[in-house]
Length: 318
Image (cartoon, rainbow, N blue to C red; front, side, top):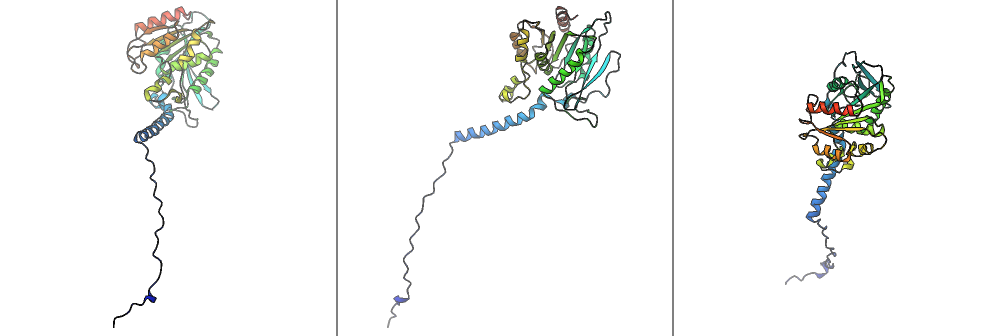
């Protein structure tokens, strides 16, 4: 007899009902052009940030300038000057007295501000040239360079970081020392800047106007080079705006300083267009072309010597 299925033993559970499912929402895709734009913005921000923090070594390459001479010059017309700035750093300058002892009256003085990869140690040729013209010469070192809180700072002395603000402030302290000397005619000071030093000379002149300013291989501003790095000018911490500092002085009706601009059309570092722009901003300035590249010394050039002699004579400084 066939077995009869035992329906009582069968489980009587309702069939499982599948849980309702919510369809997954796909994250919206960022359009490819927008993604490229975001990546570019991030990379550009990183580049600007890196340059912001790297610019000190670009504007002030103290390692390229070197540690300086072990010993300063040993000559009778020389004095080594030190000032201690508020930050506790000792900053150096070299003073050379003119050989012209024909009169006891105070003499004019030229204050030299050197380039960013130079030192006062490498600027003695300028001192000899202008001392021979009857001027005292003061070579101002920048803090953070050589013995002025730089690579060759003696043990135990604090190191220093150069900046536009600091260098200008230190230069004003050296001016205080200089004009207190009885052998210096404070009304006949000449600021001479070379390359980066032209920016220093301009900023110092904006605070204390001299009788004359000589700019060798000048720029309109350090900020103007920002576009060459693809960054906006406002990120430059040391803008050295010569184009803003000097024109108001040159246009002043109260004893404006005489201005001489010396620049080479073949300058490979600071284009000649900077000199042309400054001359356009200061129509009273005299622009003289010199030869050679940016690092060539103009001291042996006849055009340079003639320009300097004529300029100093017309300004009453010889």
